[in-house]
Length: 242
Image 1: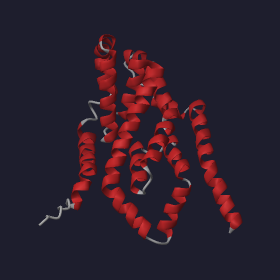
Image 2: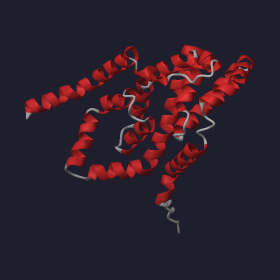
Image 3: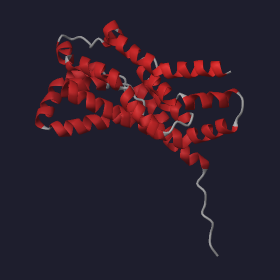
Image 4: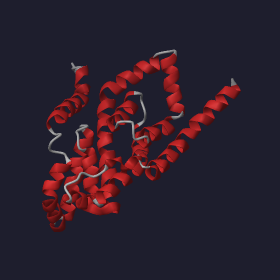
């Protein structure tokens, strides 16, 4: 007589997301003073010395820490981006920053998808009315919406990681739009980080408001316009057909 396999309790699939949210709350309350410009200022000489002795080791350690910060939505992502430019220069720093942020975003996406994402997506598929229409509209403009979430600086990064998972966006689509969409901002933050050593030596903090300067935000808004253009065209075609 064969035994039927036992089903795992439904709450088990929520564990990854629950763990991320728990660590995120604890980290936001306890790590703010550690992942800061003051910490970077105090350890910049040691970091540079270690980089000169073990470049690959520092690069791997940097990526691992950055992935953890993004995956658990911990404070300090901006400091890490600047640190990437400070330690590795514009080209290598940008690659390391974007790679780490993309991996971290994918971790939280998958955690949400395995938990609430599957349940919410199934309920939306079974629903009718406005919610279902919103889901269909998102599917039609999926890539454009995902790019906008990445390009518009006012959207919190963790929100742009969670929302696609909760509404049923495919992982591969999320992955490549994240990797490409964060490039403009990643270059800007890494670029600021390239000169961070001189700023810290003067006892100042890097000016992150640079991203709002017209010559920086202008091209990013231009990319936003290109991303939203397909949505506008589809909307106009839909009105004409109606």
